[in-house]
Length: 484
Image (cartoon, rainbow, N blue to C red; front, side, top):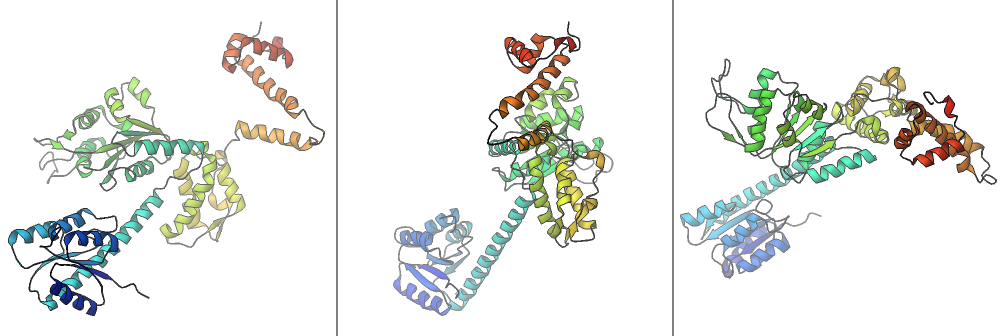
């Protein structure tokens, strides 16, 4: 059963309310009435009607006051977008008409009104409301899809730190510097910061400084006037102007020339710049998120990057960990991509064999998340069956991930634990620890050529403790390389 749409009729003239009630009931509406502006405003918020008809002259609040409140949003659910408002008056005046339309009234009718004309206006108001509702749903779907595509996947400790940093950075207007290896998702992260910022309704503009030829990058960023150089046949807006009131993402900012860095510094300081060939400054309000995969401290030391600009861009720094340092996230990323690809590639869903899963978990991802995504996309497109095998992934053996120290120790300890009699064994810790402490202390002593003071410092223990350990573990100092 369809819910009956509601209309609010607000007029202090009872005869007008009676005529309109009969008219709207015939159109299938449920009618709610108010004889003053205060009640009308309250009913708009509580009843949330699909349409409102307001008289301008009413006790309490006049119709324009009620309309003004509705225009600013009585609640999240009630605005003049969700509830079109038609204003009525017996005194037509240009100022009232202009004011009503400025405040967001859908239309304005004069008394006595023609009911046939009113029916046409009501029909148009209904069409507008339904279109607005469809647009809101579409925008939400697009926003949800954008959030899904830009979702930052991870449950590892390393990613927890990144999420915390996003939470600190996003609400501010401070410049953010994203660092990390190529393929870790710096542009994706910049979009997440933008989406969670107060500028989310503004534009997000991305520029890859390394991908644009150096001689064109200045024009790309700042635009140019007509005739500024050969081939400049018309005025062009730069990325800074296009990003006004939004976020500008500068990828590979470390590759920018020193001349261009000087111009970028001025924008970050003054919020203004000149187009190429321009004589008037252009003011902009832009939040900068920059990214690089180079060592910026080294670049500053070597005078390849301006120190003052570096400090401007380095307002909040977020380091993205390489995929090999967040191995527990690989399974989540694989699941995310495998769910996304059928829609993106217009193909049937596929699944990975257990061996393919294992191969992905043990591969050393030098290209990070981007490489993982590309490997899976290629396999989904090219694998002949519904199940992707290890061979379909085409992973080079040379890039298989080397086991971590923790994994090596775990595998070595596993048989010892399995052989232990859990009922009788009560000294497993004391039994195993010398096997781990001994090699550690021996290797450190060899590294420092038998210098016990230096070894104690490296190990982070007291020198007397080190001497006791050497004795307990029966370490032969004469065999330590370089020991006297």
